[in-house]
Length: 422
Image (cartoon, rainbow, N blue to C red; front, side):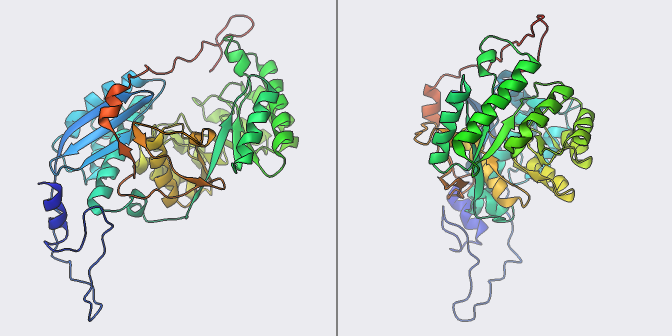
């Protein structure tokens, strides 16, 4: 079935919906009574192909259908790209031939049909598939994905940017530039200079973080919220030391205060500080988030729509968190496609405080493979227009850009030569 016939069948053979336009329920012009759609049947379409496009820093899932409608999703995992590529191949048999409109069924099939489950590769692969299915569903319906998720819970979403710097002065200058463009929240971490030398020392890193925090606070004043990123570097006692020293500078929250493997360790930190804490970018599904949410170890949970199983799973994580009055601040270091998926979810989820938006650091980007980035006005991202995710992917352009091979983090060592966390 081609797209024209599909749309025609969705509208009962009439002109209820124009291709590329949002559907409207036709009404009698005279009586204003909705047309009876009780006998309408949803036509079945099939997935005919599932591919992974590896281009630049990105890994895009591309799903084709026999209706000629193509959906795209972002499965980018900068640290494990080739394992995601392999997982897409493993999941392909569960997707080909299926109806792309059965998003929840396909999510469950991809996750539960595997004997070994979970982890970053599965989380990213399913995330890309899930996003592509939502993209298809939006294109069939002729509306943005956020409308299919329940509509706008908010009309815009606050975005935070980043700053880096080899010195505190450099980071502070970058923060001042971001604030001058209306960015109202800024995340940073120190120890970039030590990363360059494959070195980490808890004491040195803690005091360097405070040096950066003080300089950035002085540069941007009190009207910009600061997010202190720890990156899971510290042992719990050193994280607590940082909390104590950071308190006078009023961080909005402290991100990834310790390693993520043992949520019980967060309990000790929670009992010893009133600083706002956040964690979650290295959680890959709702089960990974459960203990942290139920025990209220953090103020904010931070799933990544490209790593946690996609839009469908982020909605479920948010619902779990809402019960405990915990808000989401989704992690997002993606390009236009993953940023769009993040934004659509955040627009429809009630308990979202803000989203990460690395694209605000470079406002004049002109991406060639996927576009556009969301528009940001006064620090808030506006809804994307267009059907589905609202992002165009140029497959021919993607083929011209070699895949760079992923990110190889440094092997950080302490003074005694032992391995430290990145």
